Amino acid sequence: MSYIFAIDQGTTSSRAILFDAKMKIVSVAQKEFPQYYPASGWVEHDPSDIWNTTIETCRDAIERAKISASDIAAIGITNQRETTLVWDRTTGQPIHNAIVWQDRRTADMCHALRADGHELMVTEKTGLLLDPYFSGTKLKWILDNVDGARNRAAKGELLFGTVDSFLIWKLTGGNSHVTDATNAARTLLYDIRKGRWSSSICALLDIPMAMLPEVKDCAADFGTTQADLLGAGISILGVAGDQQAATVGQACFKPGMMKSTYGTGCFALLNTGDTPVVSNNRLLTTIAYQLDGKPTYALEGSIFIAGAVVQWLRDGLQIIENAKETQKLAESADDSQSVILVPAFTGLGAPYWNAECRGAVYGLTRNSGPAEFARAALESVGFQTRDLLEAMTADWHGSGSAVLRVDGGMSANNWAMQFLSDIIGAAVDRPEVLETTALGAAWLAGMRAGIYPDKEGFSETWALERQFHPAMNDDVRETKYAAWKRAVNATLSV
Image (cartoon, rainbow, N blue to C red; front, side, top):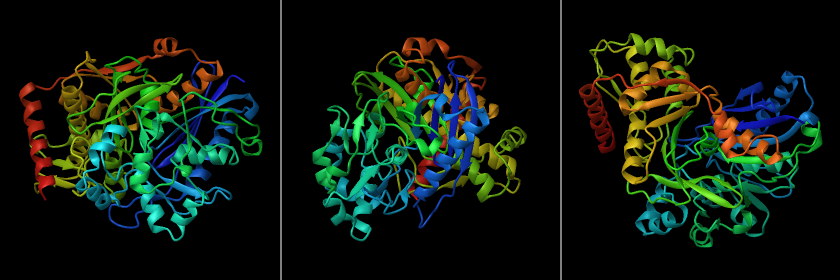
């Protein structure tokens, strides 16, 4: 039993990655699933798609590795955060589609709660803002809008969970209704200082606390899979939300260390140690990871659209067939043009937190074409990252790192990473293992199983693949960033 399984359930696909005893990848399986957009700003997933693709990829990865489930010591799970599910306690049947973290349907609800003066209390307890991004108002919406849901919830017939909870419940045959501290910290319902669900916030949102899962450390006993699902019962020993799992996978264990993950969105986390830092720049205070009952906190900046802007080039504009094409297009773009894309397709995240604004393009000329759009799309990710880092620098008074560790699909794009280094004016480190989210989940489970080393030993295994250094002239950097800020201000003012 020397293998560790990582389930990486993401926004657009589910993946299963098998690691060996040396934390090397043995096999990978991945399946995309549909996105549903019932109304403007609404995003949903069919829970059966989440479940079926998860099980299918697990089986595929085992088959490709030519091993049996009995060779696997433990499972670590990492997941898209904030996405909200409610299901029947007895049958396991969801009562509504999963409402995805990107969904903005509760914007008016959040506005009303802010207008009534509740945001300060919510932020003090959760470290979060009153924004439709988080699970709490999504859960309230389901209870308010699905026929009979509120009555059934009051009777104890319904369960709430983020994706990790739903998968664990399904994997264990309904024996475990649990989550970890990092996912709980993203629900808008969890007091990150006291380490428990907030009765006052649940009362504010009229959410029965009996619906909520038990909260555990990131490395803990979450239950055992049903033997008939994968061929043997396997212990689930590690869980962390995707961005926290990436923070662990990047070995950002020391205060001041910082990582940025480029998936569907972009998420930068700065380790602040055992102290939750209150942001003055609308960043989030969250839990980076929790081990042995002790939370380690972080400042987080969330960008809603990063890799999704490349998907838009592919599926919306249809100017590329795959993401790799953006690098050559960006390299060939006309340097005399200054096309700026503000990808506020579902609003803008940190540090703006505006749910109502929508995307815009500035600086178009008759000569603007696919190359200029591709470059503007990649640059938008760099600009948004700088927004986050400047806010973090203003909030964090400790001694931080002058290096940003990156991961996620877009981090493989050399042009995008060089521009990122240029626009932030700092080194960007890309690790040898880009699957840091899955690696973080695997390490949590493997460490708990006694197969992988402790934090210090794991930190020593982190290996650099390439470091990008800023090469842009200071004046050019500031001119470009000033143009971006003007474009964002214009977008927000519409």
